[in-house]
Image (cartoon, rainbow, N blue to C red; front, side, top):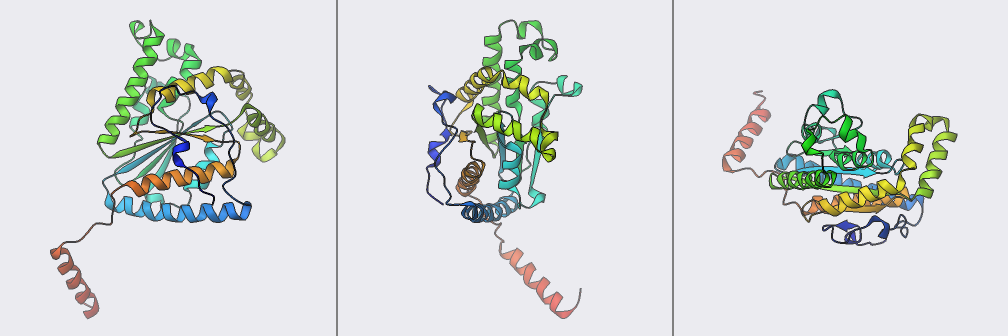
Length: 295
């Protein structure tokens, strides 16, 4: 695998951030299809081993957030990059239209209850960021369905500012309690999205993925681009960074994301639990009993 700098994709401060300055393609980090598969397999093997240690250490947890325009490859990336991990320590939650129960709570409630336990990795396929993306583009959701007091939405500039602050404070709280939040924006071009939509229409096995509503959202491309820029700009921090990943080439994207996850797992001071003298003595006694056939 060709080397690349993780820092090229990492956003830790929103100063002057604009998605328009980021490309949707990048040089190939693999020679051919076989090289891609071999390289991804190697990174995944190491990540799976690190996940075992994370689970045994039982003090940290990971929250991996995937956000993107439609057809950018969130589902397939989660599948290819994280498959093979021990299912006892990893799970995924997908967030779509809020239920009535969820609308009766603050906007962070439905995701808060899905947070990872210590030693676990949790994947959010979309997340609380929808509240400053879809809701920001479709403002009627805020005014008609979210049951907020009138004074809380009388000035929308203040509303969004408060939501960004809530998100930053929330992620800071998670970090101070051992949950590391890593956020990926899969940056697909409008041209590539069109190709993938057509593929969903033309291939029977992909028909289920397409909805006429996708074209409605596609017409709002400019508004979504601005919303994503603002969200990343206001919520990128050193402890909860964003990674803007070119998404027009799926294999490339998967390799980069797998490597980023790998780098974060390696940074943690995790290890298998060490036994004390009493524990070792009990192990020796258990060994003796097993060899004598007592149990």
